[in-house]
View (spheres, rainbow, N blue to C red):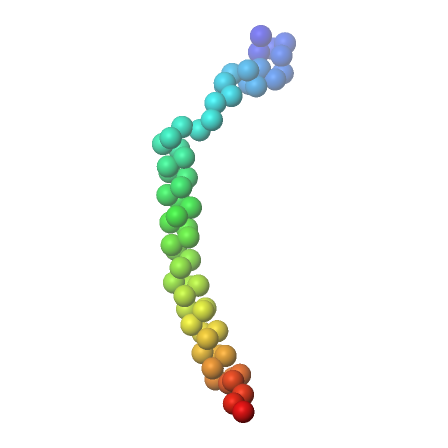
Length: 61
């Protein structure tokens, strides 16, 4: 069958969704990546706030 059908690998694996373990690992990975970028985003927000206070002070009537 493998010699005559060039797409034999399409029939080798059933169409199943990823299991619970794989979904959990993917979710943990995405969460870890999000937490990894959190300090950078915090520092960026802090620096933007300081620039707004120093460079563009609110005009007072």
